Length: 151
Image 1 (cartoon, one colour):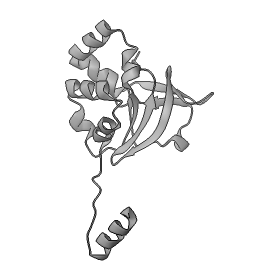
Image 2 (tube, rainbow, N blue to C red):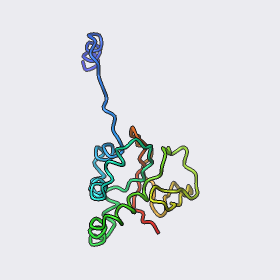
Image 3 (cartoon, rainbow, N blue to C red):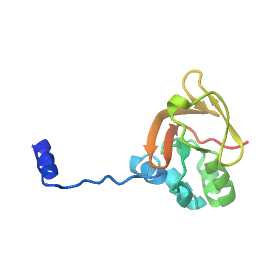
């Protein structure tokens, strides 16, 4: 029934458009990045990650942020400069798909380098990559299980 309705609509000249989603919209739609979205807003980085990019974001889930002691997380959210440094440490310029990941040091938007290891799965510093290649129209998201902090 559903296929026949779609076929009929196409035959009648109906057009369907798919709204492209940027990194932020894609993360919000996933439903498991609410703390990240709150942090991006607090740091004033939403517009940046809605920009043209491309960006590769190693995105900590809400469960990853829950590993950070509440007092430390609250302090981080209240310190815009430090929050911005931490969040931009999770972002690499360009669109790096999982198949293109290589072990070694990778420069982040923050300016420091993260260490990527590919033994026993992919690790970014001490965070394990748990899902890959969530494509957005301005880059890609790889999900990590911990918040990574610049040294």
